[in-house]
Length: 300
Length: 300
Image (tube, rainbow over all chains, first blue to last red; front, side, top):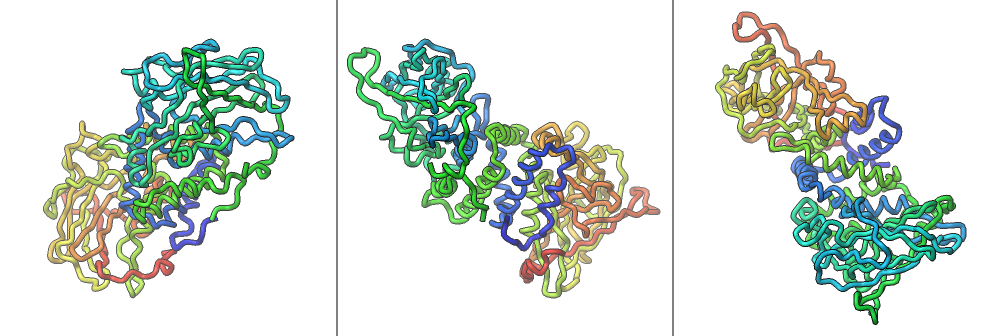
């Protein structure tokens, strides 16, 4: 509950009470909490008229920065840690043995529903780049049985060596460059060529840029590869993996790094297509699997 | 402080700690409170990924509804009660005798800095309408001395009888229709012709419309006249006045009505220009006047 304050004690409830009888119960729950917190925030800092108006202009600037290929609302939400928090709330899972599946991380604004299926052994690199080609491979297994999951799908997307995704960079990248879906074989194995990822700055020419400046924050994300793993009968996992030696893994500007998502690239010999090797194994939890009480895993 | 929760207890502080050393102290104070409240809200309702994404789309829609003549961020803020709250925080004033100046209310998104000065006795009605013409008149006096304030300025703006302001309605209204500034004479008196105001709906074709629908709320404001009073040496007052018999004074969708802002229109006889009369007197507080502690006036 909020601390007592010196303003009209009935005002916030009057705003909440304006919700009509046909408001769905979950909407009512969410909006009651949101209105309470927004008003408590406003009273606690005694927000001035000028500060409030600056906030209004900032909110307007978010949608004005947004385009069909740029979701600035999503980005601002990430910069304030909200997507990572929602991800934590949604995806904590521990089985009865106390084991956890591969950690999830945020989706980010660059996933595409249109990425093509490619054959194992194919390359997602479709356009020129200055990166280091890597053979990424691994096995997707069941958290409880430890057995491989034949037919599991791994969807990968990543920025090119200039830090941009295909639809941010149509002059240099063809559609679906550095995107692809791969289906694991009978041994639960996948393998494909991709790039060692490059650290990049979030775009700073819009609302997020203004926020970084106001908060004296850098706009850098650590280098990362986005992954989304799905399999019939398993809880899907959306995540990101990060080179362990990237200087931004300890201060990611969207707060999405977890220790078990750090990866190591090693030299690859005897492959004319790739200089580097990356083994990355994935563990998925069965949908029917019991989820331990959150309290037990709060610090994992 | 927030209730204990079952999620990573260090996460919110890590987002706050990302603010750099050059963040201005007031920005740090505001953003610390905002991040704490946003995260507490998210955890309290255990916001799902789909609900969070719906929020992101809603935030984007605010700026996408906004145009040079339409400030949807301001409107959403009003619909959530934030402008009224900021107004309360900014403008509570009581003198040593326990007396208060004219109450303030919200500015709203339709004030214009370009309203022309007009002579007392002139009309702000410049375009055709279907309203009732009113002679509005009164005296502006000093809260402490009770003396009239010569030269005080009253800036009035109002919607036409179709519920629209000039810049929402360029086909029917000339610029500065139903806007004007008037300077009080030596006796602190002003007088001009305006319309009896008409209740109207906020625009429902944008983000605010979606919010009204989600919350099962009506979009109506009670009929009102906007006023801004200024005088050298006095605290300015921005306010709105409402016909006492309007059905929406008890459920204004932007929560801006206060009891002392209710007004009564009376028949006006012997004036070929106006059917109605409205006397409205204003009290301004000297800038140097002491402001009583907020606690003393929380329920006024």
